[in-house]
Length: 170
Image 1: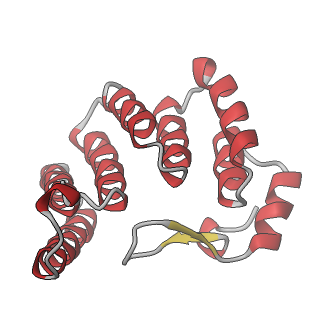
Image 2: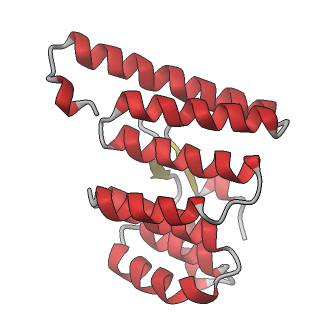
């Protein structure tokens, strides 16, 4: 199977996953695709109902429960089902066993909050993830989350300067 970087990426401005090569993604689904990646690829291709169905069927016995929960949360997130995504994020948090694992989940929570236009709260989660990655001796990931935090704060400041009501921001 191809390296996933050639199939999809996360846009650094919106924190949303973007398909790079749709045909390769579809071909990967027809090949020997691991179950969690299959759910992710179905979702990336916009086949959300199928992805949710397969994902929730896999969930009870999945050896990669945390990642599957995060993928399912992203599907709900893209459908603007914030509460359902938040519940799955909380379940994913309960699976962590190390600062690095918690940082990974916090990063995903930050992405959801950013998508909800809760930019200040997103910045807080990215900062939390950065601190946890620093403790876990993952300086590149810590810096990536500091950059995400700065971006979220920049967007938050720009929105406040545009006169949007505060209740829309958090």
